[in-house]
Length: 139
Ligand SMILES: [Fe+2]
Image (cartoon, rainbow, N blue to C red; front, side, top):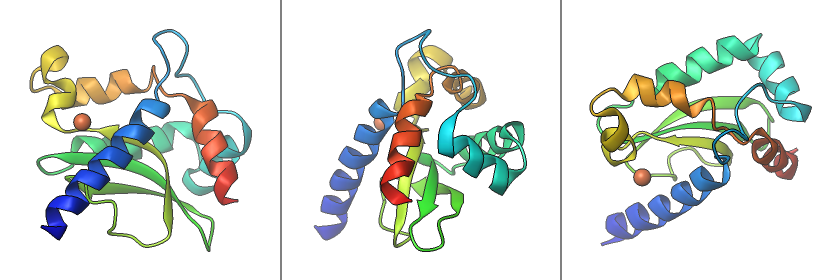
């Protein structure tokens, strides 16, 4: 019962973040600016490197789940994580800045089994302003 509750709450929270970190077609994507750009540069060396690591994390989530960019609230370092199903409660005190839904329902209609293509398309829709604003709540 608690597991089911956690699944449903996790699903609600993760989907809410997901819709917020997406922009309408043609309005998102590109490279981030602001503090989030600095954090990515500092931790991953370059935006391209970050993009590659996040894409790999998303493509390789086993079964259903999420890729997430998070910020650890105490040490304030960004970390990419994989979330199995909807469980948001695995890592304590990590604020989720951005997620990508890689449950099959998220991409099957447009991409069939080609999750990697869906992950590529995601980069054209990221709402970096939202991600940067969320980072501002942590730092
Ligand atoms: Fe979903």
